[in-house]
Length: 331
Image (spheres, rainbow, N blue to C red):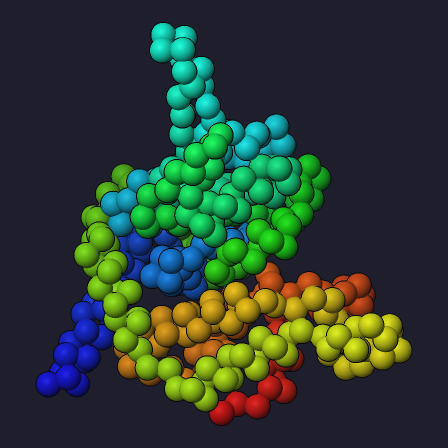
């Protein structure tokens, strides 16, 4: 009986996920990795950093996700002259009452699109830190809870650096995933050239009950102790040993000469959650080492800081993570 209930739970979850993909596909051609990443972060109660050149449907995908969930959506265009109060809100003096009142900013919504987040200075980016981690915003002397669910999707352009600001590590670590949005295939681009006459409306098929059922199904996925140890080993392998790091260039041998700083325990938690959701996507009641390897790239690529030697050898975070996965023993 228990097995039948578990199978029914997995089947129901897969049906909901397949419906979400079909609905998103009415507007977004291809980009399966991005769509699955959006759904994964929504289930895991995490945030996403989308990186890709302009024109790859990043904003369209976020808007479509908000539409199929029926959640409140706000878009914030990050610019160099943006102020923290433009994001979180501020206190406004009311002449009639002789008191200050709170004017809430656009961050008080379920789905937040932080468009071109790296165009705003650090003081604006830091305004999101409390919201992304503690799901609240402090205005004046009071803290105000954010709506539930609360989901930040930030975009940045990897090829344009003039007028941009590097995201601080504290903020990067608060993103569950960093997704690289790639060019479509020639076949997908041909389909993009033949759009429908009108933009199709999307049905709100992922409401609060459906989302909670997906989260419940993900929490029911079994993860063996050996897999949990493997997750910790992978994350720990991104951290250069203190003695090696302190010994200078001569002591930094092998892979660790490419890494300045490794991932924090927050990465282990994120990898643990995402592995279960990957198993849910495949309709499996258990997590495999391949789930860990698949989730490791989007979970870790923004959490490790590469050294100048990695840049000199033309190595990006994905290449370094792939090397780590190659030498960490698989259970």
